[in-house]
Amino acid sequence: MKLFVVRHGETKENKSGMLQGNMDTILDEKGKKQALDLNTTLKNKQIDMVFCSPKKRTLETAILAYPKSDIIFDDRLRSRNHGEFEGKSRTEINLEEYWNIKKNIQYDKAESVGNLLNRIQDFIYDIKQKYQDKNVMIVTHSGVVRILHYYFNGFPEDGNLLGYESTNASLEEYEI
Image (tube, one colour):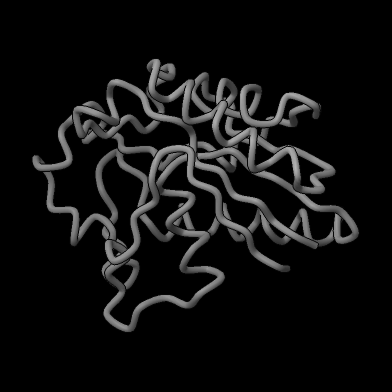
């Protein structure tokens, strides 16, 4: 089974460095172009199923990048719930603590990084059980892409997950 992981295209909030989380933002013009450019790469891939976060920016990316497939929404692919940090600039919070899996800080409203990992592991377990003979594409958010990167490549000893950063409309491939 191959897993194709796509991060949504650029939004104006990405461009400004804002933590979007569960805000339902849309692609900007650059983001639409990024998704269309990704279509050139994806049309040569054998993809059997497309799963998508239920946010507008991921749906737009999925439709533009791979229009020949039905889309299955899965809440487990939504962005990390940033709670009290949603809408804030990335410079306004301590990202090293926020993205440290060993510290796994429990915030008042924001989802812990450990909880994000658990729901992504649950999703991976399900698709491995149900679709082991299929190639699956997911369209999701930067935090989920980050978790998947470390899930497949190993977590750093110090727990700091900031060493990997995806770009808008990036494509990663993993063998399961």
